[in-house]
Amino acid sequence: MKSPRFVFSRRAFALSLFSAILLCAAFPLITWAIQLWDVPIAVDEPSPTLSQSNSSPAIFMLPEHPGDEPLAEEGRPLYDSYLTIERLRANLPLSLPTAQPYKAAKVVYLTFDDGPDPQNTPAVLDILKKEQVKATFFLVGTQIEKHPDLVKRLFAEGQAIGNHTYDHIYKSLYQSPQSYVAQLNHTDELLKSIILCRPRISRAPGGSTGSFNKGYWELLKQNGYIEVGWNVSSGDASAAKAAAIESNVLTQMKQTFLQSHAIVLMHDGPGHIETVRALPGIIQALKAQGYEFRVVNTQTPAAW
Ligand SMILES: [Zn+2]
Image (cartoon, rainbow, N blue to C red):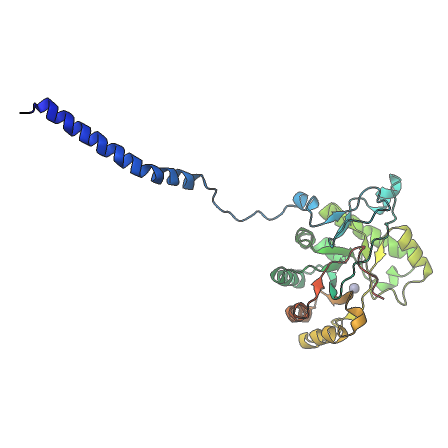
């Protein structure tokens, strides 16, 4: 007969063995649980801050001394951390090296003038984000002053910002080349106060034809601005409805010689809701035709 002590020991042994087996079986489960605990929980990425965007590869910042080597913009918006006056004071060059024009069979540059506007600009940006395309926005100084947050959003989302003068009032603007460039300089100051840099591309309100003489072109060149025209007009400056705006763009873009660098004029300033309505159809039609969407920079060929 086995002693009670021996029976107890066997029970204890069996219990220990059972516990050990249970522990071994549970070990992978415990390890898996620990690993699971360690896995970082996916969170929404924080929206880019201004400082992050400034060093982001989404933009190209002009170097202090742009040399003769081609600018490595690669389709990105081009900005300068120096104002014209700051470059002059520091004896830094204002000229831009000639970039190799970007060439492909079907390239479109969507451009929007007269913003930012609290109704139309966010709507345009939402459409561009949804369609994953970039565009160029020529901003007016008086609108920039009213809506700095929209300027920040344009910049942070990698859209190209251009200078469309301070007040857009032809009479004062086109008094002289000096009055015109003074408005560009002032608008640059406003932009730099918001996004810490300024563009080198500008567009004359109403276009340069009929407003510019040789003196304007010379002063623009001296100040390092690139005047950007257009070769496709959406006709949205009139009271055109969305269907007509879309048709205007798509009809003009049937001209083969434009297709390598179609620069489309549109407006996102106050009152241009029909442009917003036309935009998804325009983008989708151009995508279906195989167009590449780019922002305006020094690689963009001249409109004409
Ligand atoms: Zn305009």
